[in-house]
Image (tube, rainbow, N blue to C red; front, top):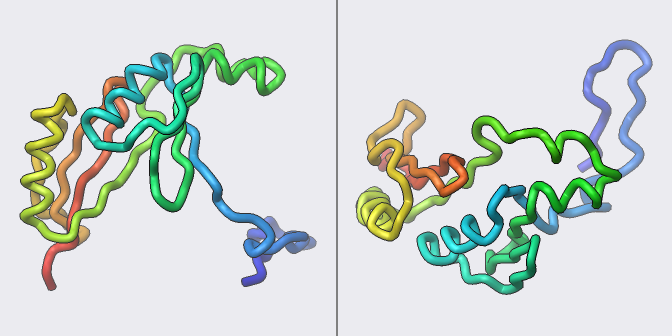
Length: 151
């Protein structure tokens, strides 16, 4: 698929590359407490730790590398960009976990809460056709667990 420049008015140039030239290899989220967040993803969600270093943890996630890096450690890697030294406010990211069935959502949600996830909203039918529950990780990011409702 050839991507073209978004409509920026007259004279917008096309992209000089194709999505076949690159692929999403991994996602790295930033955390104030890398190991606390990694322990949550490992112990609560079952994403096994593959690499554990002082400022970096990589978790087992089929398809895309999923890692956590310290916010303070990212500064030196980016020429000390000021955004890595500011206090974090609000949610940084959301992970969405799809289940095969509505009954799985309720069962898994209860298990996540038992294991230490903070319940935000119990699973319920949504206007967008999912049965969805929301829970938070130790850094305050809210994630969803859902299944598509039968038609």
